[in-house]
Length: 290
Image (cartoon, rainbow, N blue to C red; front, side, top):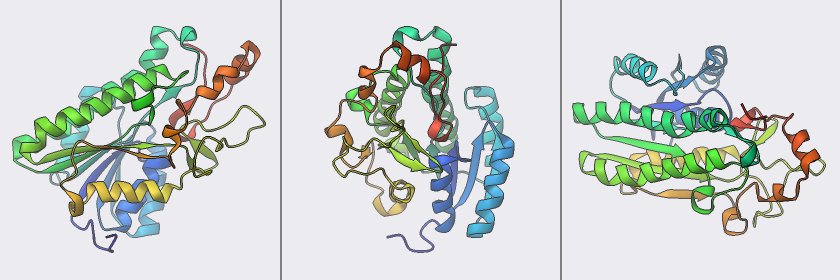
């Protein structure tokens, strides 16, 4: 189905589109003919990505600085995007995470994640959705969640709770907005290799090796696999899929009680070490409570 002009004439918005999985999806959309707007908090990174992907694909991508925690900013940026015409699809990809024992989290630490993953995702979805409804346009929303929407996951409670909320939004709005020609779906990725790191926290404390022993396919995902599934769900070729959350994790969630369950074996010294490290790719961070 991935013919060259599959997405020609489509206009998509990708939050967190400047790096990682968002960048990979954006590139694939451009390759198949879509125009893409990418948003994020670091305009310099977005501009570099836009220039790189324009040269690589010949497609049209435009960058907008946006903090999705700020509802008023969202309205202004969506208005700017809409001046060239309505969007056809929205990809809720922006995220953040804190790997921490829950008892070490402060309210501000919890909010640092929930304000992006839960609140920000809703703000953007509602801003785009109400414009589709007002204009009588059809549209598709695709959200990137995680497999712990089904299992929960220790040590990432703010993300686990927030991603579960996004999955609930996906199912609820699929029913509410379906009659208006708007459908919503979500992808729940497992560990994916992103640039020089691995998204979704598959980095092991033991020797810095990639943890694939709990993945039945014994490997991490390739970014192209996620990008192709995103294309599939956003395209008109399977427009009867609505309200689904699809795992793309090599079967990991069926074989493992949450990505971070292995951290149950860490002692206090291990946690102190972990709290000094961070993974910038994929939005995963280990940090002290704030």
